[in-house]
Image 1 (spheres, rainbow, N blue to C red):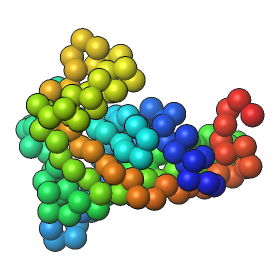
Image 2 (tube, one colour):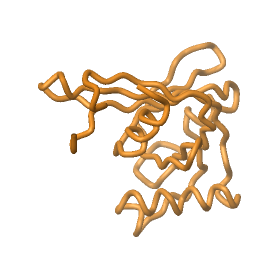
Image 3 (tube, rainbow, N blue to C red):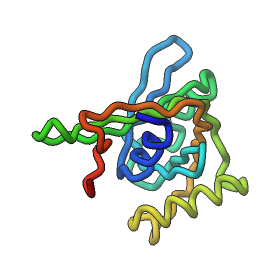
Image 4 (cartoon, rainbow, N blue to C red):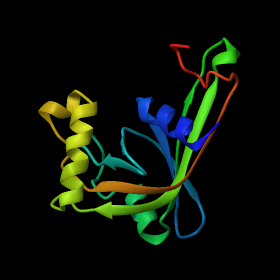
Length: 145
């Protein structure tokens, strides 16, 4: 799979998983909503119920900015299986920063629940250094093919 195909499939996915690592090398994996803008992926801390806005993923990025974002497609027709991964460096943006505001605009356009309640917390920006993936068929999981 080419990097462009991997980026296209990730961009179309509705949910992905974010992998970070803490200061002791322990992995942390969580599902995320996200938006892709060129070579960057954004995810924001939103208002869904959680114990704190100071999420482990943000603390992990502060001590080790290397992250991975993974999306996949599964169905019983294994000819249509695919997965894509974006490896990069994460940065935590404060809500008032211009880049964070632009990221929230992208997220609001992508997810209808954010229209009424846009994410108000920190934004994670992932500067993608490598796009990779695999598909069981040469159509790269494209449902239109």
